[in-house]
Length: 435
Image 1 (cartoon, rainbow, N blue to C red):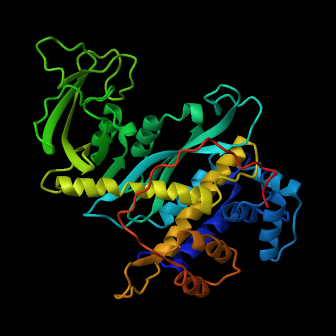
Image 2: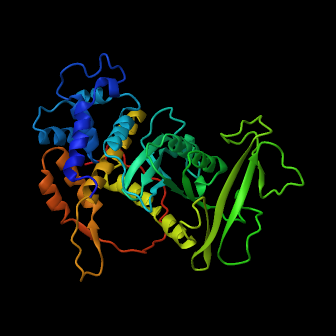
Image 3: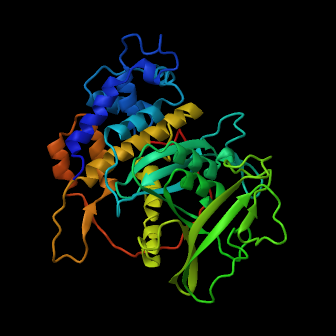
C-alpha cells in the first residue's frame, strides 16, 4: 500500500481548498473575488464529481449533498467561464505532484502512450474538429486525447487534448517526454503509430528507454524495410541507424544511413544542417503471437535485462491504457459532455482524469483477501467504485465505509482473454438526451 484512501482524499481536498484565483482564473484580480453561492472550491469539486446527467441535475445533486444553497444554472456557468484554459491541467498536475508515482517494474516506471477520440457536440465554425463521414454526406466533431498512463499505478501521468484534425500524436508524445515530471528510469511503451525516429531520439536524449511495436518490415512506411534479417521465425538482433540531413551516398548502406528530408520533423538536426548526424542503436525482436502471425518490437533495453519473452509480456501490459480509456468514457461518463464550448469540454476532460486517478488510488490501495479455493483471483470492480468515490469526496460517505463497501465490489481477473475489435460508426451522446 503506497497511499491510503484517507491520504488520497485529504490530498485532493486540500489542493482544492488551497486554489487561488492566481492559479486558475483568467483574470485573477477580479475573478472569484466576490462571495457567491458557487465558490471556487464548489465549482471545481462539482466539475470533478459530475456524472452523465443534465446540468440542472448535477447542480442539485452536488449542492444537496453539500447541504448548501443551490445556485442557478447561469451562476454555475458564469463561474466555470472564469477558469483559464490550463486551469484543470494545473489541478491534474498538482494532484500528481502531491502523491508521487512510486511503484515500478524491475526498477522501471512503465508509461504507456496512446490516444483516443472523443465525440463532441456541434459548434458553429469549428473546422478543426470536424470530420467528414465516409459518404461525405455530413460529418461529426471530435477532440483527440493523447495520454501517458502509468501501468503499475494505473494512473495518468500527463495528457494533451487537441482538435481531431490537429492531433499530432508523435508531437504530443515528444512534448510529454520532454516535460515528464517522474524521476528514475522510465520505459515508454507504445503502438506502431508512435515508432518514429524523432520520438525515439527524444527518449534517447532524455536518457530513458522505449518499447514500440514497429510496422511490418515488408510494409510501406516502415523504417525496418530493407534490413537483412535472419532466416528464422523469431530473432533478437541489434541494429544501428545514422540519421543525417545530407543525401545518402551510393557507397553507404541505406539500411544504416537514413536521410531525414528537409520537410520531415527531426528536432535534433536543423533542416539546413548537412554535417550533423544522430545515432540510434536499438534491438529488433521478431516474436510469434499465435496463429502463425508475428510482431516486430524495437527497444533500447539491454538484452541482459529483458529477454524477448519479457519484451513480449511488457508490450502486452500496454493494453492497460486501452482499458483506462474505456473506463473514462463509460464509467466516468466522458462520453457525456455538459457544454458545447470547447474550453468547457477541456475542463471536463481533465476533471475526469483527476477523478480517475483518485479512484485508482482508492481502489488500488485496499487489500483483498484472496480465497485459495476460488478459480480466479479477484480485484475491486472499477465500474462499481466510481459512484462510491464521488460520494466519499462529497463527504456523504466516510473513508471507513468506503473501504468496507469497495472490498465487497469484486470482479474476477480472467487472464489471457481476447475479443475481436467491434468497429462501429461514430455516435454522439447529445446534450438534451441525458437523464
